[in-house]
Image 1 (cartoon, one colour):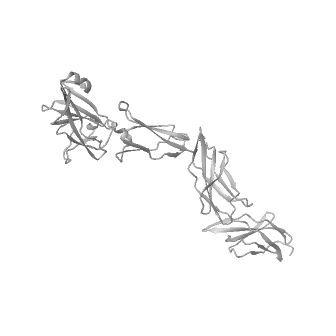
Image 2: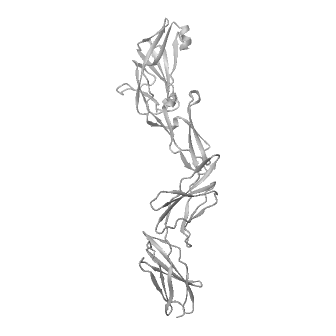
Image 3: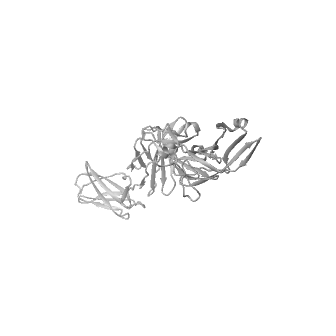
Length: 400
């Protein structure tokens, strides 16, 4: 709240209000007549004053003929960029250390510093100072709201300093009006921000933010050719105690499907990701436990893959000279198939770009050699092909 220091002057000596009552037969006190809100930058607030006279045991209000204003932030005035500007109701005049008639003072602030403050004196007809009040921006600390632009930041190995956002009367004001210091802001954990005013009018507030581990990067998502599922591989995150793996099947929601308990474990096979034609999407979080609290990284970039069930060969025969004919079962979700024949280190692969074609003739083989034959299903989504595991092998010797 606004703190107004009230001092009185009488008989050439300045005394506090309580003590001066005992000494001076006439004592004046200058106070705000109404609630006064310190103006935000670019706006005007009117300070209305009243002068109280303590005499013969009673305090009564007396007219204010004129006041003077003392801007004590001299250094800012000398720069030519005044901090506090006082204007009349029409906005035509600017007062510095000036005498102003009446008791209403429109105060306009162009900017703030820690030392934005003024003294306002009530004067008698001889321009003698009777009493004054002291107004200071820092006294409005409790009327400000403080927040951080970000309350969670990833670990970088350097000190992190999220911006402090200060609002007064719903308007953002410069945060450099306050002393701001950051603590424990380099390692994973909870960091703090101390916001203070200067020591002699001291106010303080503490905000916190968290530093989380770096996000993992998924390097590979591959379908196991053995048909065991999808294998996810990611980069190691320094300082992580483990990882959370999240999966979404089709249009469903993400579910946590695995928690690893080692920061060096960087791959996992999802044996449940087998439903034919289903899109599986994954992301990974790193985590680190500090004390009793666990800090989780932002999620990795999402990687997706379509699971394709493998087919089975129904027959593979040497049907003509140096020719092999292979047939297989239909995969209802497939866009096509690949057929591979292998002998020794030599292999030949042909593609069938139709889901309805369930046989293929492979020619140009070598008589007398034995070949292993495999068939693989694939789905084409956009320009990307997703492959199943290879079928069980069939062995065929070319005798013709």
